[in-house]
Length: 210
Image (cartoon, rainbow, N blue to C red; front, side, top):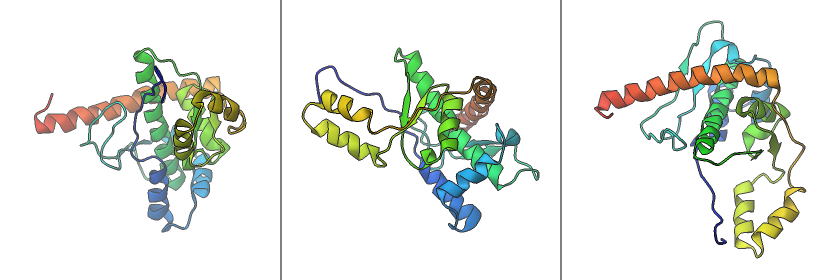
């Protein structure tokens, strides 16, 4: 839209859709996203050792860029309940967000804040979890259809001026990472990446790719 203005994009193909899928799976669609997140909140940091890999809709196009990836669960046992599964799924999605942020950082682009919208951000619990896992301050965008809002800004005159005027009025208070919880999630994130990368190598190895 303007000279020298661009964005970096990393796509996670099933984030909010994962909650809809879990609602259908666990309650025949009777539980709302908010109710699922309340179930997840009753679980604990790390979902009692459960990892959920959210590649549910045609692979991954964020960092791994592999359309053959499928979703998976690691560490599940009879001691886990529905709340653990929901929390693990949300943690898995936010681990992927962190993977994207870290990829941007390795390319020289430093993220300073996350402004998020959609079903996963509908509760303070979800926003705090996003901040704890990524280690970045996170704000919820008050405009639900933020993609359409962004497109309108791009199409409008004076993009940067308009964005500067509307930014403070369209975001809510900031959630900041809790140091102790972020530290725990740092260890869990490393374990999560180890699981998912082994899955990628296995998948590629089975097709002869290196």
